[in-house]
Length: 105
Image 1 (cartoon, rainbow, N blue to C red):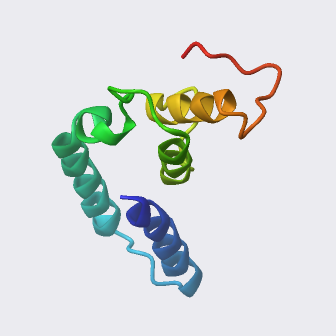
Image 2 (cartoon, helix red, strand yellow; image 1 turned 180 degrees about the horizontal axis):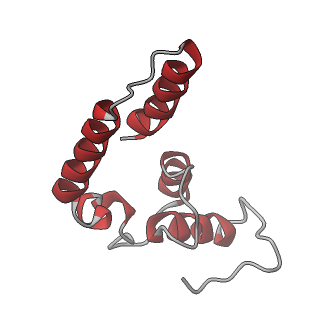
């Protein structure tokens, strides 16, 4: 999905820049149809991504470090797994939170 989001604008920009843009809009319509069908298949992204759920058991500092790397693109305010990993590292003394940080998600 990420590659599509990056490739599509670039391809459209190149088509316009080179002067071969689709005058009828067929390419754009086709891409919008693809996005809509993909969105319908995905449904709720959190449902398809169980790795973002809060851990069922407390993490060890080693597990927390690994989860922080794995969820590096997530925010601690939106990803329960990264939130738990972050505060595990704080409790272990391996990181210092910003004074404005909150333990409540």
